[in-house]
Image 1 (spheres, rainbow, N blue to C red):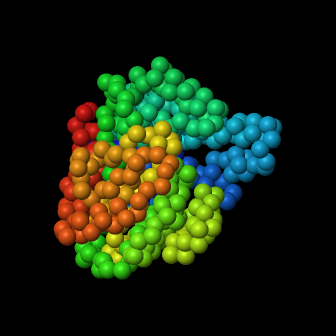
Image 2: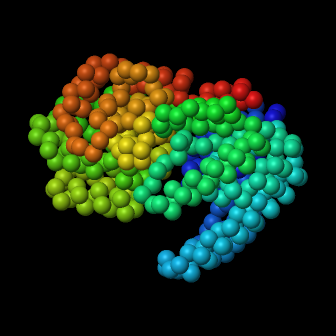
Image 3: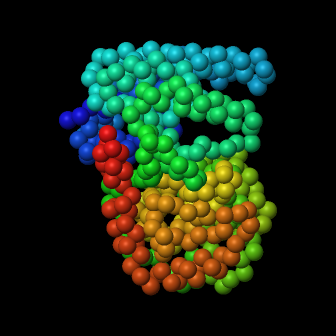
Length: 389
């Protein structure tokens, strides 16, 4: 069996995707360990996880830095300087522990999820890795997002300049998810975000009754670029006969609170903010919903194409969904996606209901889940990636 060490500093934050990737590696005959930084309320911790028998177990852990030193105080210039200084120290400690662990084993591959700006301090790490294994560096969205912050955009420009001119030579392959038209270079391989179909294998494929109520679900960590304010504005203007009930599952961050306030100002009493839940905890109720709402605001992050994982999960759940940017993981004319214009305007809810009436005459759940199981799995994506090596 081949051996892979996965460097993912966002393993906890994006663990659904990371775990799905690791399961795909396992199915392709690649045993994987994950190196990451976790944190509790007091400390940052260097951790090694291992995937075995469908479980992720902690193999090793070591406290490397006090949590407060990196996340201290108010945003004064002095505090920001101390944060930056200690963040560099955090990455330095991680590098030391990571290389020590790497050198104790023998790996065929090292897979790295984009580190961000601090990749500029990883030249020595990449050089050492490349001496004994293939280094794969994933860029989850390419080209990178543009932000309103000049400082963030400058940091990203510096990151990509150093990456392209000083670091790329140590990397064997760069999987990317295109969100805009761009010409990949010779080391890049275009793939799609995907999902772990096994999580959805037991979904009830019975279609919900459709008469006087239209039930909609939103699953997200809501951010402004999701564009759900457009949906709320559209609900305000809706004057049809069918009652629309919307359940929104998100943590109550600032963007969620803003959206909730907007819905309340329009007296949309059938829009329910349910809070954050684990996806597995609501799968048994998924069959009661008619459609899901994907992102309606990729244009706000200068994205032309929708690269979200959520669309693939909706498909695996047999949920027709609405979005604004084209998702290239689906063929042109895929009839179970309803596209609204990629702008900040509201749209006609009746159009969505009429679209659902049309597809409801078909066995859409079976069709969607079949497509997801065959085309939208990480196993398929990474079989393609590793074949390029």
